[in-house]
Image (tube, rainbow, N blue to C red; front, side, top):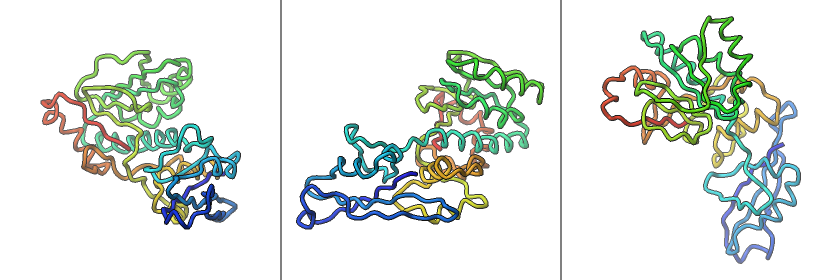
Length: 272
């Protein structure tokens, strides 16, 4: 089960010394799916993280909270890691972008930066629409069976390497680590700043998502702790690049219009 922290700022005089938890409730989303919401009172002395840690117990590693809330490393609790879910969204969303490009007459070159090799199973999502795929990973063995499957299904070969080779301006880069430093190409990274696509069934969950919590983080927790495999087909509606939101179709148009942007000689980073 996951835990949502609701931070309440209030008059310091109304807080009993050493107390942080103002109330707790279990939110039932139906069909046995639920989560804890803890009201956390923050006053002059800040938040008593030890009290929250003691209460959260085994759920203390599955915390969701407003992005502005800083949880100390020494608190004994930590935010739920949503990286895997964000990367699932990245692959699913880029499949749709690549498909639009394919309909426009383009098949893009794609580099997947997957240091640990845990996203090998997602390659088949994008292979049909890509001209060439190179995977940068330190665990090549994780991709062996996927490469055989891809060749059997599509007759397509995939290049494996442990280093980032020269990238051209028109290459699409899927950086699953979010840490790649790249000066060329179109970089897609699993960081914050995107709106998840709402398809059938997801609204039922998002109705329970508090306004102060990222919808993406919330869906990631629901997917992980409430056995919702359908969420693994989720995709995002928009990409954020700079201060502009791009729809999936606009993103495809932007990549297709390569010549206009090559002159900048800089990478264009899309956060999802």
